Image (cartoon, rainbow, N blue to C red; front, top):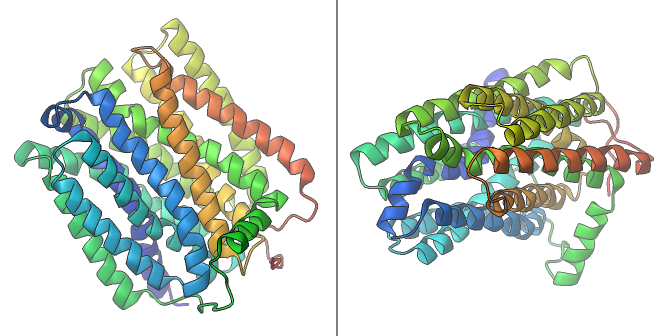
Length: 408
């Protein structure tokens, strides 16, 4: 594969991966504006985010079997078209329930892009390169928290909030064109793959009972919950508590994302010298320590805005290093069922992310305690799952070594 083609594939796959996060980040600065228009509160507006997370989680379980049955591109086309239609529905929303519903269907469509991109990494690149490719995707993905809130702020300042969803529609159309003309079909449709409920459930069960998948997918999902927690509560913390302007919020949000992006690229260097397993072990321990300090500080009022930014930056760095390795190790044992495995991994991430974002609303506190508490809880669970689950992995498939890939 030439460097030019390699770069182009990464760019398209990265754009697919970034579609759903971009859909979240762009409308964050408009929370209070949309809430006022729909006659509701910014806190109730978090329901539109929760419904989006739930939609992505459920949708990925749908697309996994479809990707294995019909190839990668046909289900992707369907998902992108559904996303476009739902985004238009968001544009015309006149009530909170309508927007919540449209965001759900927008997520159902957008998650096809996420699942297809993750699966095609497994199709198009050698297993030994997967962790590096996932890190590069995170580099493209990382443009979302830097560009989207700033773009959202600019749109709200010059147009009505509905224009945000018009922009998202245009982005999805451009991605559809790029996929149609430039992204190769990476998997031959399998007409023997059954779409009946029982075989699908059996197939998912075969994936999840693989000890390596369960350990790294579940622990990776709880690690990634730190990012979801930050995204779900960032506007409430910085705009609501620290009273930063919408424009400044875009810069703070984007600046913090540098931790996540930069760490993922540091991981690209680390995997040259260390195994993914070792890297994730160390970073999860660091994540527990940092989130524990953040929680303790929030309980005792240690941190102002600067301290909070430092703590969040540390958490995002740990997530940025851990996540590519968790993804690569989760998918490494699979070839035939890569679509289902990728879908299940993504569904776990989004379901636990939705749970984390909902958990924020359960902690009755106006400070940073809800964010810190959920981050700490998710990191501890990730630690326990990782270090207990490893004991049950008998035939580990390396993600960054030249080991043969087991077919299931």
